[in-house]
Structure formats: structure tokens, C-alpha cells
Length: 131
Image (cartoon, rainbow, N blue to C red):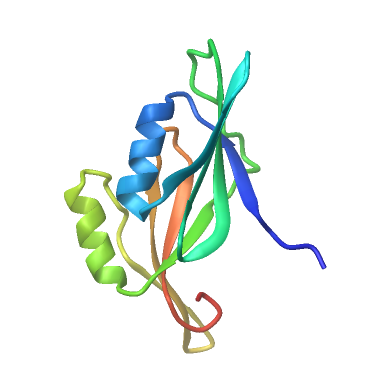
């Protein structure tokens, strides 16, 4: 069986993106590979083997067009309300908390945040299928 290991996103400013993912989600640089025209930065934490791979194309000065195909990354947290407050206090402007129901049953409780490049990240309360 295939195992998901990372998701890659292109970012404009390495330091700003690494700082955001560290402060917002506790992700640390697991590995940084510098090449002539680009740099790869793998971010992870001890809670999951899944990584976020940041790709920085050297010399790029214009933001990336995210298009209409990209959806979002998702992370789960133990206490959604405290994370919403903490992330808000960092100045990252989380959206409102939403409860998602289906046939009268709560499926998820979540909010969204955007990274410095505009990528959306869904922050979900742990429970059910969202562990």
C-alpha cells in the first residue's frame, strides 16, 4: 500500500514561511536541501510522520497564482478553541470556528487560516475520523 509522506507547496519567502509553520503548528525544519536554482525545506513534528515540503525557487519575486484546483492542507488539534485563540494572538487572523453537520450529526468542528503565500490550512478538532 502507498503511504502519504508529504505535501509540497511553493513559497516566496523561506524565513517567513518557516516561521509561520513553526509558530502556527509547531513544525520544525527536518531537512533543508539547497540546490543551484531552488531549495527544499521539509517540515515536521513528532505528532505525525507526514511532512510539509516547502519549495523556494531562487530569484522568484512574484507571488504564486494558487489557481482554482488547490484546496487546503489539514491539521488536527486537541483543543480547537485554545488553538484558535493562540493563533489569533500571533496575528495570523484565523477565520471563525465552524460546525459541520450531516443529518443532524456533527461531522467536524474547524476553522481556516492562510499561510504567508495564501495557502489555506484547515484546523480541525480531533475526534471521529479526524485524529
